[in-house]
Length: 77
Image (cartoon, rainbow, N blue to C red):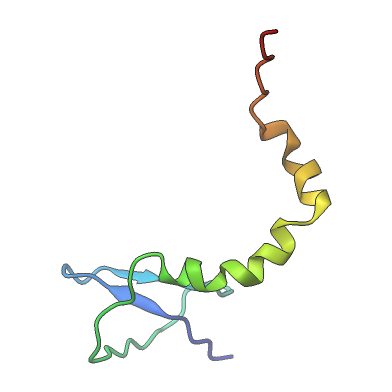
């Protein structure tokens, strides 16, 4: 199956994939360089924030990450 994933190529030619995909073993790939600048760093994260917020704001997420919370120090009287 052919999969398409967005990427950014920096000034040195390094390719950084911006999406997730699944492969089994090595595969050939074609790279098409578009005549437009790369997206603003973090733009993909900002665009997906609303969609992910539905999962992030569920109560079971708070429970799952509770062990990572920093305890609040007691207040003095």
